[in-house]
Length: 114
Ligand code: 5GP
Ligand code: ZN
Image 1 (spheres, rainbow, N blue to C red):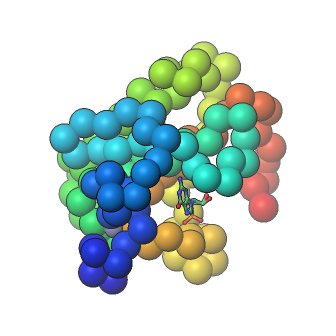
Image 2: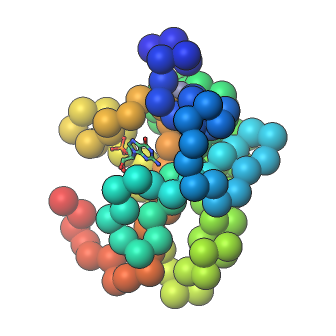
Image 3: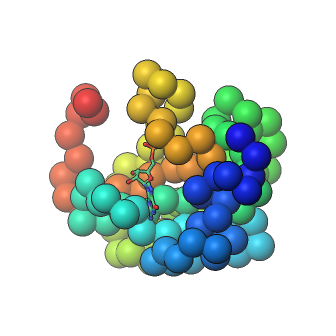
């Protein structure tokens, strides 16, 4: 999908407004529109990458997870605990095909996930 048609490319570039949690030159973190927990933030690379299967760059994946941990700290759930999820592909439940991780917390998470 070309980046111009991608929802998260538009959010990451500020074309579509979102509740920004933090950002840097490469990463963008914003509140999920349909939160599944008291804290539910999405972290994306600003550059378009379709999903985990397309993310060949170790450095970028490292930054993505590092940013997820920074989000948890900023939202005050680093110590209580949180979950980082990368839904991937159809059976993984991915609905937006721009690489992202969910940072979920502020309540007890259950296992197994649905
Ligand atoms: P996925 O299902 O691909 O893992 O996650 C996509 C997430 O994006 C969902 O949790 C959904 O609520 C969120 N989402 C979809 N559209 C928007 C939007 O326009 N704005 C924001 N902030 N989140 C969105
Ligand atoms: Zn995109």
